[in-house]
Picture 1: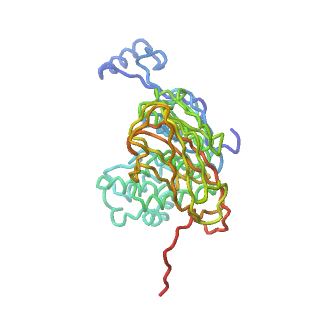
Picture 2: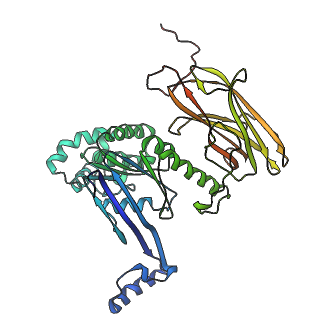
Picture 3: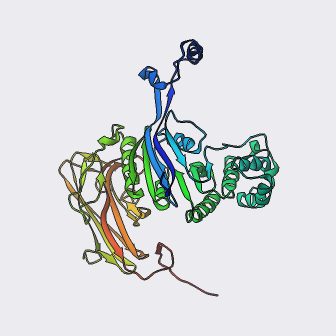
Length: 426
């Protein structure tokens, strides 16, 4: 294994035998004693096999944060358990260089009958810390967790948020080289989540992280690479923004019944005209965005912005079928693909047209004040759908239909400034 790689997973597969009834499992155990059955799942009838992972390979490099996304049941947690050594693979192997600390499923590694303090000793000792080391770190662990006097209460009395606070506080204080975080932060309160993310961002400077989350915005902003798992297999791996957008497109089509459940058969509608001819898009094709343009208040095309200014976003489209309850909208994103702000016709009760007939053309113009952004490149995603914002069918979504640059000299670390009505000093 290369010195630059801290974790290597090579052709990992994990399979389980499915039994129609519980006593069938007992019969298999008894019969194997006499028949010499070796437990190889591949020898089972195909209908009795369930593969949580299928030939998954990936590497985690030094000082890299690797994100894992996928639907529930895609194999994310199974993979992390195998990497951490708490679960054995059916086939394949893993190699690790460095101390690994993990925050897996809620309550993992804790004895509910023990107090929080006793569980700190138990948990930290599993990572190789001596009793003396743990005692020296105890105050730091308690302070980070912010659970106060509850540290001496049985953890079975803890809320899920308190579980996470204590578990994260332990792994934050054991000087690990690699952290494995499996969605557990989702149950914490906003204050503690932010505290954990500050720690993780600091940890990234010298350590490596496996990060599992359903939050694609966090994936895009936090990870260096992202791997998409689907039904136990790697579907895509690479740039966080690209992989997450492909994943969201798939999720949307599955949710609205437009997809077949097979990621290789996603329906895509091509943009006819936009600033970015290479923009990725998707949708069922029942309507198509034919043109979109960002202009100033005098209808001059905008490619760069130096300060807060009035703009117009014009989106033209054509119905390819008879449509009802049409919604047109946009989202402004930063270079990483994080959503900054957006608007749509439904939210403002500005129905484009209660309905459109097949072949009919339409246009929506959004007029608003573009804020002063930090220097850099930004994009505008545009879309047309039918339904409501919470339940709709996506006809055409273009991820980066328009790209523009901010030339401002703002350098304060903020994303953009907002207009002030007044600043009064007393």
